[in-house]
Image 1 (cartoon, rainbow, N blue to C red):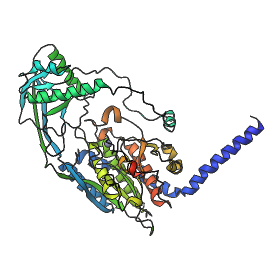
Image 2 (image 1 turned 30 degrees about the horizontal axis):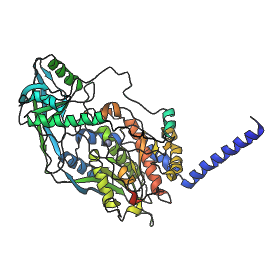
Image 3 (image 1 turned 135 degrees about the vertical axis):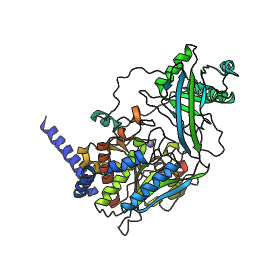
Length: 524
Ligand SMILES: [Zn+2]
């Protein structure tokens, strides 16, 4: 290296170090407090206890269901025990009708007996006792193809899709980010371009339209039940809703998602033109169709005379799907938020700003709970009207990408928060949390905040088994949640919330023009 170059490199290195120090100095990090947070979160953790109640005792929790309310009341009780203030189930508006499964049984009777792994789809009705009927595979490439089934489906148990591909996979079930992937995540994505005149995938749209027509046809023909392949393998069934929560919505047929292996066996026998007799019983009930929805909230009040009216929020969503117990989606996020509150409370933290936990309802129906909350407290998108707390919120931190540990955070296109988050992550780098990306991430409850111009963030989390196994499946249960990952996450969450509550200024906001608002986005 030439002397001049060395001097220049040293100067650059010095400037970079100065800048980093500058950010750190500006952030006034209390590293002694961090040591205590780490001790409380990583050594004295109570997250497992909370998680067992949330995933084994009070689950699943479909929005506004009796189970949801019972679980919410339990959390409110725990929050009060912990000494949190203003713990309550806070109404956000009308949810609609909820749904509850009481009984499920299905088996193949002929040609051989086989119990069927399956789960009724939410918001579909029961069968009125045991239904024994013939399985019928309805195949159609066009509406005209349906004619041959006219008059032949009364009381039948129909399958509307053919054999599903279940080829062997050599992909690992669980995954973590490696350094290279994290590095790539910090780079801006390639600016997108749309090919001019690219057709909007007419095949997929036509296929979807045909499926809707088929579902209506089999119902009109008096079929008894619809069986669907459950999208997973190894007995894992992914299942969501098959009906509507809306008042006065038309009642669909009972519909059951079954293990793909069992579905395929039935299809292959039918394709040999051999009869298949099935037996199905579903008991399910709907609640009143105008139930109020509630989020679960609790606070550690701020103590600074000037800043205590300001708020730092953290949370995850409290509603779950029903086939599993919603352990990773999003019992994990609720446990992380609650444990972070416990850590701060156990350390006797006196935050300058008020720290508020919110566990949201009906995220799975399109962020209904968090959207309602944002509308009530911060900003009404329809009226484009700010609410009293709009200027008081510093930030909202969300945890809802499974139970994987925090590897960093999405800055959600807010450049001003990047150096702040980098400074906060510096001293927790050894826990694997170090990456700040300017990129946006979607699909969960920080979006209603973001959409109102408020700093709402979701962490970068390791994937673990989320996409392959647990997300919306019957295997989303306690055993597939990684406790060490959640201890790490609660510790980092507590540190983030602490810093946001203690720093002199609120977190900076990005440019927001209420008049340029697009319609609210929906998600997972
Ligand atoms: Zn979720």
